[in-house]
Length: 145
Length: 145
DNA sequence: TACGGATCGTTTGCATGCTAATGATTACAT
DNA sequence: ATGTAATCATTAGCATGCAAACGATCCGTA
Image (cartoon, rainbow over the protein chains, first blue to last red):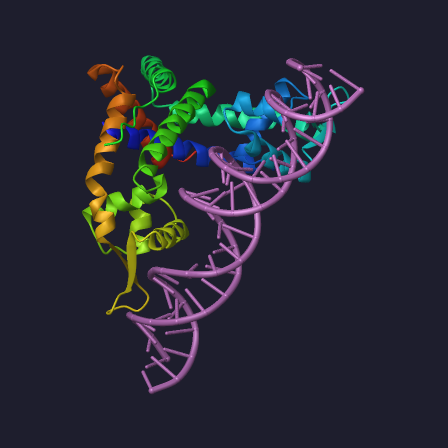
């Protein structure tokens, strides 16, 4: 079933590239967009909280946040109650980008799935959820052979 | 259907990470493994040819090849007939890694798909192929709205 | 035969992701 | 209360991918 993994990788890469192209038109790269999606919903999160929600490591968020700060998309504020924490707040510029970016995202998703019936989408979703569950709950052995 | 893309991304990341972990046990990283898979089959390809087969850019292959050369996995040879070409040849070390790595790869794939029935695997494959076909033949509009 | 365009590989610079090491601040136990 | 633990963010260094710029070589034409 190595072939299935190859297909999954290929599909994901095509989608990621297309998403990055679409986001770039709005001055936002794909990694930054992931941060935006969360902060649009809940502003003022810390890098660590953001990393947990995005399933990436804290350094990844820190670096992305630094680039976004340089791009004028967010600002860092030290938490007054706990000096270890940094709170990430979106700028008006980032908020203005929400509508067009979300629209582009929806358009892309619909485009990619356009040739799939509702039933096929349900099957796809179910299969992917099973794989995620499997990999999460039962990490691969790796034996040592 | 933004959710479907998220699931696809998540599943792919879990698989990629697990694959990289497994490969690392054999002194090979995930990107290098992709190069190996092709060269095991057809030794002496050029960076350009390799890039085309792997669906990545030439610089990506060049950089990976440089790391692999440093790791003693391959050697570069100038093509005697065409001075612009470089031929990548595997070392015995790279060839010795073939069996264990392919075994690990098969094990991982089976593990990941273990909870899927044959029917579910067929549906998954079919859906992924449709998405790939769609994204390849009908690149997303990107409008400009 | 000499020159201009095409074809390669490489280099450079960037984005995204990881791990490991570092530094600052808080919390806890004595 | 004080010193040690734990908890954060950051930095450094690496792997993988891209695009753009560069340099070398080859090919076709004048």
